[in-house]
Amino acid sequence: MIPASPAPLQSDSPSAADIRRVRSFLLDLQARICNALEQREAAEGGTARFMPDDWTREEGGGGRSCVLQNGSVIEKGGVMFSHITVKNLPASATQRHPELAGATAQAMGVSLVTHPRNPYVPTSHANVRLFVAEKEGMAPIWWFGGGFDLTPFYPFEEDCLHWHTVAHDLCVPFGPQIYPDFKRWCDDYFYLKHRDEQRGIGGLFYDDLNAHGFGDFETCFAFMQAVGQGYLDGILPIFDRRMTTPYGEREREFQLYRRGRYVEYNLVYDRGTLFGLQSGGRTESILVSLPNLVSWEYRREDPPGSPERELVDVYLKPREWLE
Image 1 (cartoon, rainbow, N blue to C red):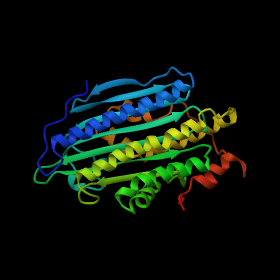
Image 2: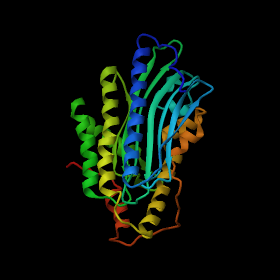
Image 3: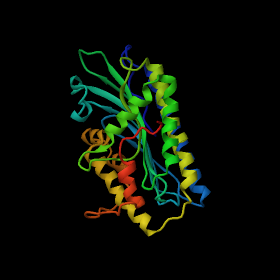
Image 4: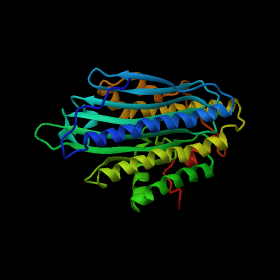
């Protein structure tokens, strides 16, 4: 069983009741995402299902890792819930808040990656989380973070427009600048500097979403819920349109090659991966985002005008999709 929430926090941070509400939402979101993806498996006659793996952490907390492997539609998918306590924050968690080095914190969230089998269905990622830190002599500090992004290998314009329309529309109730700001943040964050490439076509990314920069706790929590639902609203129609598209060995080889970029990003740049490993997190859960099969081809050159070349030349660059 997943352990109970830690002791109540100070009164000027989210209450224990607030944390329980966020936790309840996250567990429900995890279950809904797993169920929706399993329905796509079943629709194609697949029998693979998400296998729950409950775990605890010696330092405090635990989680539930749900993983589906070798499905007919999803080659590998991980939908991970965690709620942990960290007694001494590592450097990767304090880059923007150096004053929190050594603080005690609790972090909870749902993080997911799906690697579909069909090369015409994009890889997708989403994460929503709450972070609360306490340090002697300081008021507790808390914030929400998260977002979602899409990594197609054979992009379709209508899928990209749909993805960004969902992202835009969920942001509208929270202010006119939320989508353009968080869309730009996503473009900047999911960038492979050593390749001079975007990881995909982006989406939303945000961090430090708290009472000092966005709104009160309820507004921040409402945005978390909108982003969680937005991932489903964004990805499921794309699955339904593309998961039966015929493909051959050429498309499969290119998919595995481009997955290499995904692995490079996660291991070199991703702050969540670095935080998890540096804080003594559960390695299997942290690295579940990596695909089962991947390849690196030396100095691959796709011919101009090919769909493989078009991915890099046209789609893997920051773009204002809704303009």
